[in-house]
Length: 334
Image (cartoon, rainbow, N blue to C red; front, side):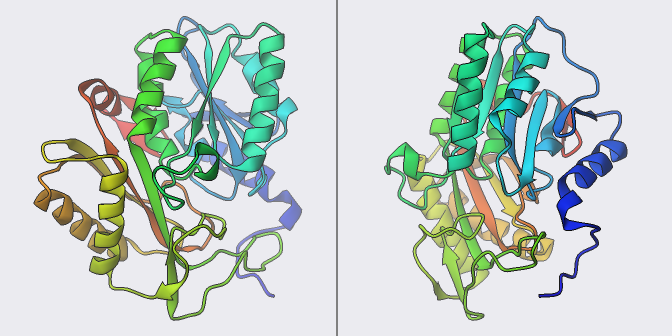
């Protein structure tokens, strides 16, 4: 299969994209030790550091959120592959003098295995680090066991809230508590019409018939959704998804929520705004107030056709941290 992508040697994708990214935003980020993206201007060591890990190929996630008020370091693996534990440990060693480290791990097998290995190694070295697992995907059911719920785009607003809590000077246990509280009422549901290709091979990760879509398919084309169905209208799709999400986070009349539409890579802003419009109206009819919103690409899967809808219910503290200043390449709050 001929790839229509502007690339060089497929084996060089990750180092070249990281070099390009950090050259493009030198006031925000710097590249350290090959695959560790760190803040260009480190925060003071009297504050908790926030670190995450994940495979490349999902840009701007996760390295696009390294910056003031968000991540201190992003450890990058090869395309769609988790980085190894030694590289994650290396990043934590660089931040060991901080008041503590919160390691954010998305719930995917490789991320969990390598993240937990690095966590154990760091703790044996006396590094003050704790972890949080993001499991915002509700495709298996909102009450499904945590291990069955994948980490999707909902990790980004959680990082925003945790990063602001750290910037405010909270202790590690306090930052973790804020992040966990937000995570419990933060849910994501994806819909896919066309799965991505792997940029090193050009092959489709999985396939769907041209006239079908699937609500709940994983971001790499994994199963676990509702199964293929005929392509529905934007309004019908949005209404189905937003009602499932609102139920999952127990949103009720009078609640203040975040509504975020995350394009998967090949979905146009036109489509995303049409979907956002319907989801907003459904929540409005339920008496639920949308007080924070975004409609953009925050975590993509190459040219995957579809989007993720993310809803979170705020309390006063998490809303304060969500709205706090941030200065990363792809999330800025003044």
